[in-house]
Length: 265
Image (cartoon, rainbow, N blue to C red; front, top):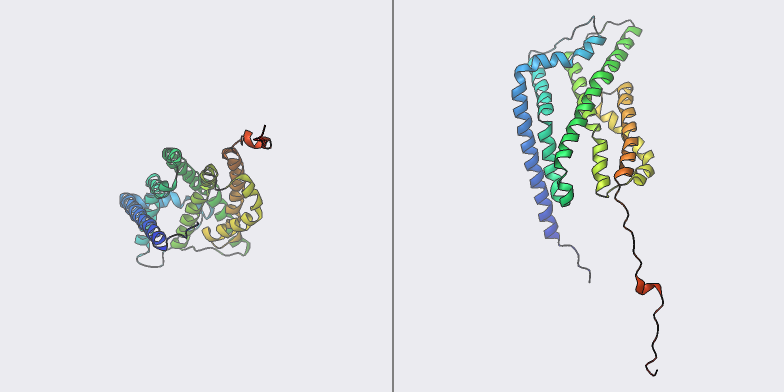
């Protein structure tokens, strides 16, 4: 007899997961706040580092502020970004603590590799964006201004928002191989699944690139191309870590037809 799931138990389980999620979000918010407060004193120096790709392309221009509080808001944004970067290992641990109850015991032992690799991949994504994507993006925009003979006057808030959004976006998408590793390790997906959904993944990648980057085609392409490469790497990772199929041992009792014994003999 098959019994239907208890709606009350399902609701209690869902509420428990929501409470756990709220707890992890609150802890993560407090960690970012602590990191931001520690970074606020150095917000000016951090802003100088973040603005280097812009000034390399727009060397003969300067950024302008358009409101009295803009410098203070700018320092807050820079401090929050620095707080996320400083506390990223602890933030990834909060993510692990949320999903860990659903893992097997052997998978829970991967907490240290998960935190280490996720932090490294996030840093690599930010570094790749800072060294390659942002310089090419700003140079492209500078060339567009020159093509129409206009001297640019860029708002400081818009330049910083573009920089921070792109940096965080690349840091997040570089986590794709690690996410694939754990999903393939637990048997949720495999390389055949990724291959079957490749065309859909291409569309989704361009949608994600459009959401995580400024509204221009050039920057979206600069994010979409690495994402396509990471998707290809993820297919290889899924093939590599896929759990081996269990070997079926035939039952000897089923290999031959049963013999009928005549009770008279």
